Amino acid sequence: MTAPTALVTGAASGIGAALAKRLATEGHRLILVDRDGERLEATAASFPAGTELLTADLTADDDLARIEARCRDGLDLLVNNAGFGHPTRFLDTPIAAEIAMARLHMETVLRLTHAALPTMLARGSGGVLNTASLLGFFPSSTYSATKAWVINFSQATARAARPHGVTVTALCPGFTRTGFHGSAGMDTATIPDFLWLDPDKVAAAALRDWRKGKALSVPGWQYKLVAAFGRALPPSLAGRLLTGTDMRR
Image (cartoon, rainbow, N blue to C red; front, side, top):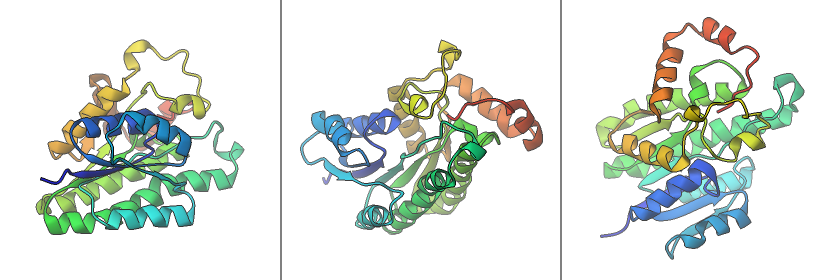
């Protein structure tokens, strides 16, 4: 039997690397995408021979089109994981940086999913796993707004794809021990230990929920409670509760 093929963006570190590691262990043939080629090679050094490494900046037109074309070649699983946050608030952030984040979190997810789904639907199997964020349930920042889009898009696409045997899942992690928060300029010193998740456990939960056909995956009992709370609150109240916070993931 031919090994299933999975393409993972943002695969050089954090949740993306954890997902890639688990998929490799499960026997997938991997196509790993990241803008940091050196770090990607270092991450993939222990992966099986035949792992395909693609260095690409998905906010650049040519690179995005190249990965889009690779998705059209046929995949069993697409993992849209690439993302970043800003160390400054909206009006203190250059608009070009905001546009780049919006493009990576929304246009890239849209285009790669659009490219990968047709062969999956024709075959009647496969799926897409989109990394969103717990903050997608709370109107707190431009980051949370893009992740709310990922959740909404994933749920809508899941409903359309499910009758054809294809599963689309939005992964909504809370605080996870990766390099994300440091690069986003967040002060995490006051966050209690029980709120931190391990990226390997997040990856395991995400793939388990995807295989169960769930449109939403929220790892960790504590974050399941937070997500339920956030979805039940009126947006205006949720926004007031988050005023002055600096949590981006």
